[in-house]
Length: 131
Image (cartoon, rainbow, N blue to C red):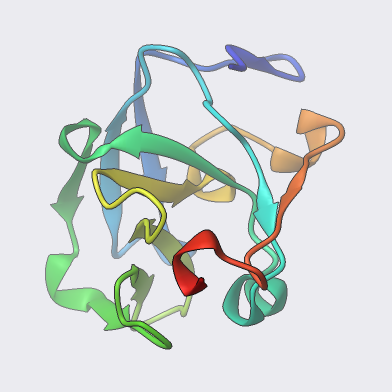
């Protein structure tokens, strides 16, 4: 759990946006940034985002729902969302825990994910749901 990133305090209620601002999310982060990670699956390896997790009720699309596009692959369990205007990945409903969203920490307003320090990488290539 991370409540501070660099000099930035992670608020209980936090705003996240895509690059162009068309998509805005409201996140409730009662425990700060939980489980920050990268993933080495074929999609995450290409997008390179650092993600945190929240329960489904702690992420709400405030604006830009019409601009969000859905991408699914492989088992089509995870639901990956990105802005159709600027292409930025904002969040996804997780495959390993469909009761949670993973969100792009880089989309949190005022947060620099490069200030997180060492971030572990999950083994998405050998996902437990594949066996």
